[in-house]
Amino acid sequence: MTREMVVTLLACSLACFAVVAAFGVVVQQDRSPMDGFDQWGRQAEDWADNHTILLTALRVVEVGFATVGMIAWTTLIVVAVVGRRRYRAAGFAIAVMVVTSVATTGLKLWLRRDRPEWQYTTDLLNTHSFPSGHASSSAALAGILGFLAWSLVGPGPRRTALTVLAIVVWVTVCFDRVLLGRHFPTDVVAGSFLGVGVLLLGIAVFDPARVRVRGRAKPGVDSSGRVAGGR
Image 1: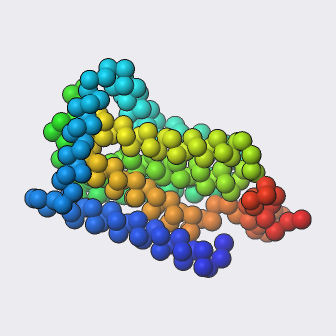
Image 2 (image 1 turned 180 degrees about the vertical axis):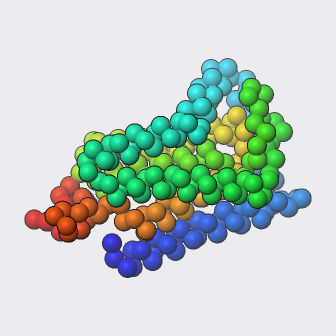
Image 3 (image 1 turned 30 degrees about the vertical axis):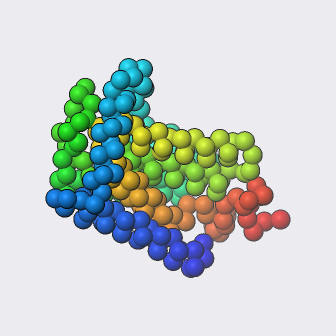
């Protein structure tokens, strides 16, 4: 990875963190300029509350991508990557998910934003709301999956399927948090930026597409499906 790429990744990561910080400041105000956006969450939860089948599906998503679920999904990715002897990429995936979780928890404890008063009544959450842990971890997980797909998998149906899966998972989890009323929309947006910011930072630090062959580092798969730098 070139120095210019590292600088760009770090700059984009800092920009994401700046967005999270801005949201954190705004939502702490008594009359937040984002109140109108957050109130959309009440309407979304009211609508979902009238669809029993949808609520059941949303609960499945909620449980499947909670802490235990995220550990399981991350483990699957790590096992798959280690199976291809991409240990740097495995360390990258673990580090990004751990840092995202710790950063999310730290911000929750610092800002102490209450949950929406209209959240779905089954298994009410009393922990702090900002930023959304589901959103931050799903954004990080989706980013990891997408990055590894484009770095380590050659062009074709598998790469496309993994990319689409990553995007669908992230979007689904974000909507799940709003439709169940577990989070304000601003929590979800900030959580997503946090996850992406940590992801970009992890790429800059780990350069996870790089592999080592006979003691020498070499890049991952290029856009043609061949090892970059090879014949």
